[in-house]
Length: 236
Image 1 (tube, rainbow, N blue to C red):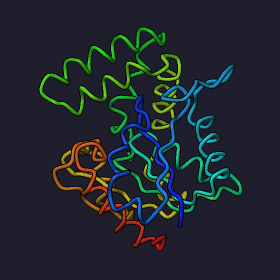
Image 2 (image 1 turned 60 degrees about the vertical axis):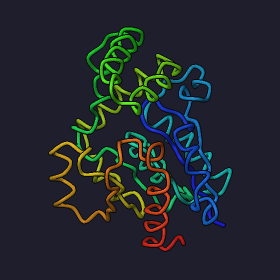
Image 3 (image 1 turned 180 degrees about the vertical axis):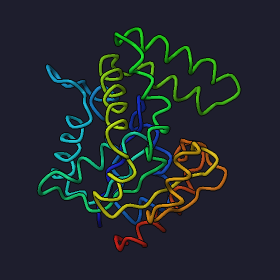
């Protein structure tokens, strides 16, 4: 059975993928949620949590367990792209769950660049999420997880994602790195990313009515569409 690493988006951790472990997807592919350093796993000692540093860890984990597929959420789509580009990486397929396509997609992570310290960013980010969470349980869950994240890791990763998005087009990096399929609800994407997706040849599958955290609120739908994507790419 093929193996698939699941890596969460900015500030989140592997618990966001727990619901899909109880779906039929786990009978078709060995589904392995994986915590990133500072986000469910210990932060990298004496090393900044940049995109490249985390991509190296993801690549190492893929090699260790023999995973050829990554299900990557949000900003972790960039991380998966960088991991797949490393020499000899076993990563051949990326399922990008509303991963960053353009700079506008860094609407959470990119704001870290506005702050001069990890604690200042953490406080402002949590306040922002509190204001958004009043009538959105998916945001309330996300805020609770972000509160457990390592502040320097959160700040460093956010600032580096902002830099990457200024210097590159994340969607192009995704399309060039591996066999990629984009899983998304159009209602969740900014206009710039919708335009980029419309003009690109990146294979895509829509997730009707799902929030940005489809693995949490629509696990059965995501599992079915992920299986469809894996069939499209020849994994299943």
